[in-house]
Length: 358
Image 1 (spheres, helix red, strand yellow):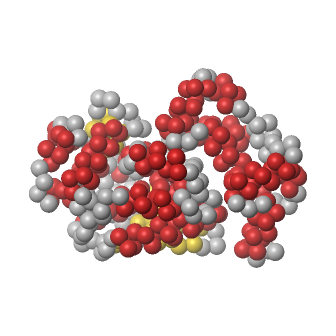
Image 2 (tube, one colour):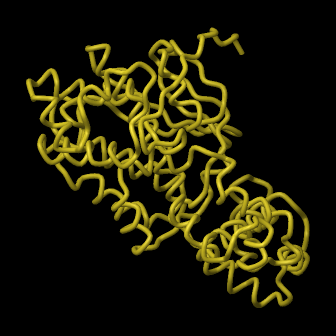
Image 3 (tube, rainbow, N blue to C red):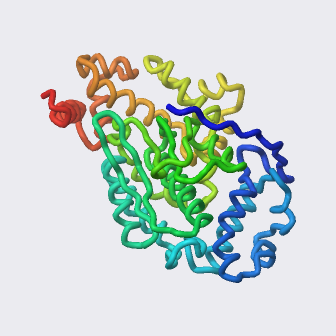
């Protein structure tokens, strides 16, 4: 892998009310505003409607609080009637993303959701195409575009990839580990805004913009929950930009504790005590960070380990059930069918057939 060019980091100034994790770089905000600025809109008035002073964006290295960023995006969408904020050749009508999400939560797994999502947006936009490429071990989601204006191309490539990755994480209810990230544009002073999102090596000036990850992640099941979808849509778009940024988040710490104690299933009270907080605080933090409850995370951890064992190990179903903390095989059967729609034995048989090892 070629060496990454070194760029000296500028000191970052966080605006009042913003923390480093819940704030957006104003350089990135400026790119989002480039479409409406070129279209002749009064940027100062638009920002004022979102409760943002124009001079906030002029301070080098400053960051915009998440709440202000969300209000700004809502204002831009409402005023322009475009979910791409005039960055494309034709507008994406408000409600398009919402409709796509309602479609995707009924997909069987991440692979199907990505493919349908790509097809959906191919019908809605002319300027770019998102595609899934699947190899023997790795997979990638990549963007190709026909945008000639460099600033818009940089903005669209960066935003589409970031939003796609955030949506993928939300659909399966967990952070998806990546192998590497490629961007077609050069590294910018505010490219560090992307580092906490992906937390993997990033290469710039590449042939195409893409994220690469383990192909096995495509088999993760989607979490079809209408109530969870409503909470997610209500927190858009800032949720996709910051929700899955931090592996040291409370949700990831909870997952780590649950994975290390599979044979001794932990309760909400157990985990809260280990994290030195009350059960009520833990429940609230999980909802704030990833809009999931403790039981959802517990089910995700057990489901992920169960599917891995069924595909990769020769353990019997009884042994897998015991290793996950189930005292009865029948209880494991019911839980696994609820998670995936399949019985454990059926899932193992299908996985073996798909890999050619049956």
